[in-house]
Image 1 (cartoon, rainbow, N blue to C red):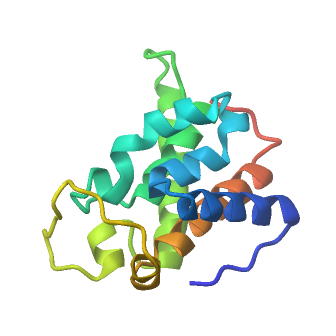
Image 2: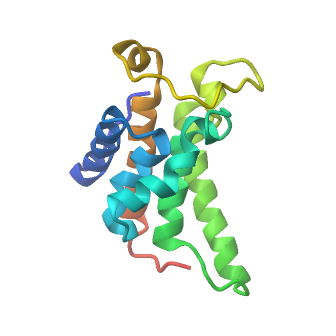
Length: 165
């Protein structure tokens, strides 16, 4: 799951997300936290906004928190707010799907339990695990947050000339 980064800003976002995760952020917090400036958020607000999305939504092991963080960041940077603007809504949904599909292509899934190799429909207690060496050794999450942040940074770089919906 090693991803070749095409430029320094992309690598910087991936490393920022990785470091935030290693500092104790959940997967969603790590990815959104890497994009605080672009989203116009203070880090504390970003962490609060993403706090329930770790562990595939509070350890339900559904959509990967790294993907959720990527989507939250994209929403804040380019989401639509005119509820009557169907074209903007459709364009935004296409952007989100493109991001999720890029992650799925590289990681094999966007579902937390599948990425962790857990049984179908398995969830965990809502009590987080201690962040030990063993925790980091058995989980792909450090790489997944870097992957998600890198995908989003690369997507933003490629689409920076295109107007937001």
